[in-house]
Image (cartoon, rainbow, N blue to C red; front, side, top):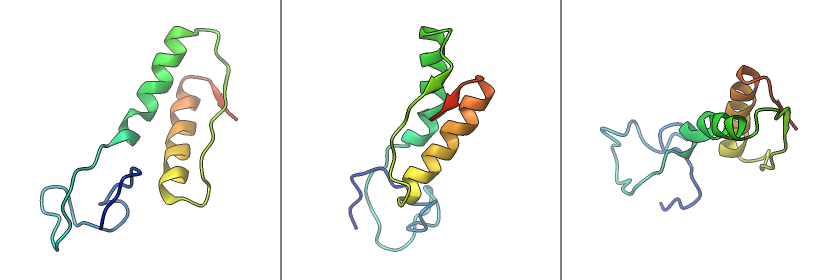
Amino acid sequence: MCSAFGVDPVAFGLAESFAKPGGRLTGVHWLGRELTAKRLEILKEMLPKLRRVVTFYNAGSRTGAENAKLAREAARDLRVDIV
């Protein structure tokens, strides 16, 4: 199986863990979702008066929905609304 669009293989159930994936799954995964909060934090530092951020994602995608949830949680801490 090949993933080029950012699916977390553990969260998606494709691997048991990163340390011991099991089966025949091989490859590299970039954990971009861990950067969601940091990206919003940097944006807020650049634009201190920032109140709203618009984001687009595929609500039918498990990864997209998960990233949107993470963005909303991070935005709440920064007092920013995700639209």
